[in-house]
Every structure is written in structure tokens, then in C-alpha cells.
Amino acid sequence: MTVLLDHDVTAAQKSVVEQRLRAMPSVEGVALETRDQAYEKMRNDSPDLLADLDPEDLPESLRATVTDASVAEAVGLVIGTVDGVEWAVLKIADVDPLPSQIGAIVRLEPTATAEQRAAVEKAVRALPRAESIEFENRDAAYERLRKQCQGKGDLAAQLDSQMTRASLRLQLAVDGKGRTGLPEIGRLDGVEAVQLVPVSML
Image 1 (cartoon, rainbow, N blue to C red):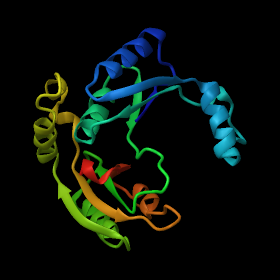
Image 2: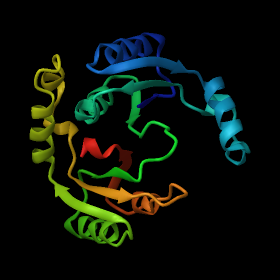
Image 3: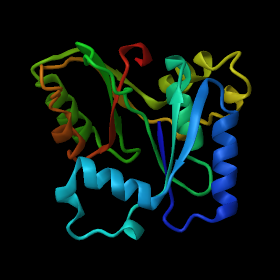
Image 4: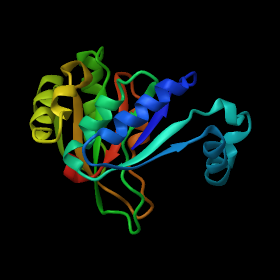
């Protein structure tokens, strides 16, 4: 998990975010990535993106590992509402070899229209390696997450139905180069975010 901090986050807010993240169930290895570290990493991984960027343009972030897939989504939603947090992003841990199947969650904007949802679903169903595609409304998402968080500290109590979104949830077979076709889906009207997750999170 990567927790991107607001550009103008205060030291006090940063401390609270880090404490909250460390207190979450099944969260390990919390570490701060400074702007300079993020810039250096980008310089090594994607130097072409740095042409017009300085370290000050990049956000600070907290990196962590969520060891229990059943609560990872709830952890991301809860930490994403803490003051000083811009966005919390889940992704599959870097492993070699890549898994042959991954999960994907296509979260819809709360204001997505029926037409936008239909267009997103059509695009998802057209992905050549997509399987087990299911639509989940925000109320069903809230109930599922609440059940998954029972017995996991006070995580269920921290969840709020306003945090959840309607989504399309699916499995994808990954080609040999790790391509999924999902970046294009993320640019469609009505889509809030696309996250690649372990199949066990679905």
C-alpha cells in the first residue's frame, strides 16, 4: 500500500497518519518516502517523466505491507479519509514470476451515471482476458467489508458507508509482459480508480 500525503501536509498530520497506519490490523513495514527519495526512484524507473519535475513537485508518501488480503481494501478506505492523506493505493507486491491471475477493482465515481456505468462495464467485458466480472453496489461493498473486518480490532467501526463505492470486480489473466489493458479503463468517464489486487481480495 502507498499512502500519498497532501502536498501541504503538516508534520503533525504526517505523524497522525503514520500512527493510524501502524495501528491498523495486519499492517507491517510502515516507512516514509520523502520527496527526494520519490524523485530518485522515479529517476531510476521512469526518467522520461522527470523533464519538468523537481523533487518539490512530488508528494511524500507512506509505504506499508498489508499481510491479510481480506482487510486490505478496508485499511485503504479508512486511512484514505485521515487528514493529510491525498490518496491510498493498493497494489500487488512485486513478485517474480508474476501471478498468472490477478484481481482488479474498477471503482466508480459516486456521481457516475447509468450510461457511464454501462460504458465502463462494456469496456471491462471487452477485455480479452477478463473473467468472473461482477458489479457490486456501494451498500453491498460496505456490508462485505464490515463482515470481513469483524474481529480485526476496531477496523469495522472505523468504516463508513460513505467511504465505499460501486465497483466492477474481476479476475484477469496476465500476459507474459504483465499487461492487462486496464489503464484505458481508468481513463473512462465515471471511473474513480482502478486497482490491481490479489485475487483473494475479490
